[in-house]
Image 1 (tube, rainbow, N blue to C red):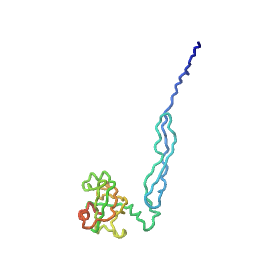
Image 2 (cartoon, rainbow, N blue to C red):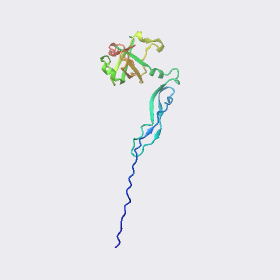
Image 3 (cartoon, rainbow, N blue to C red):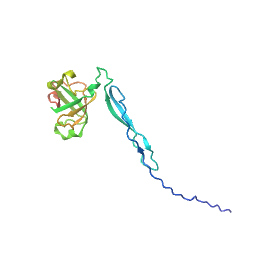
Image 4 (spheres, rainbow, N blue to C red):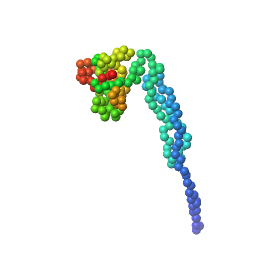
Length: 185
């Protein structure tokens, strides 16, 4: 009988240094990817040092943000109107109905603006004094049906948000117009 010896290789202990990912600073934002209306811009950064030996993973290398562009809009386009911002006072000639889609927390702290809640429908009165000739006798911030526009509260400037105008203006005799939540100024 022959005895077989199994020899184990000597253990070598190697110490590896943990290397976290290192990225460059952000590059410049690209141009808006549209000439008329809502679009997006991107910027990127690169990996300077890849992670190794269990180091932290690399963060996102690309950022994207929304943009609005008007330089390529035709004269009869409604896109510039979507970029308007309404100024409000707690509340004529006509009224408009809006569905609130986004609202800042500051609106929740002022009782005059309690009607501004996400998902709520609010009525805004356009009085004669607020009509603007350059807007074809509309109030500034009147908006475009079906498109989100911005608003902010005139006496509570940290109260702001977005809303979408209803397709039709309510009848002047409706409760919306006789008891508006706000007025355009």
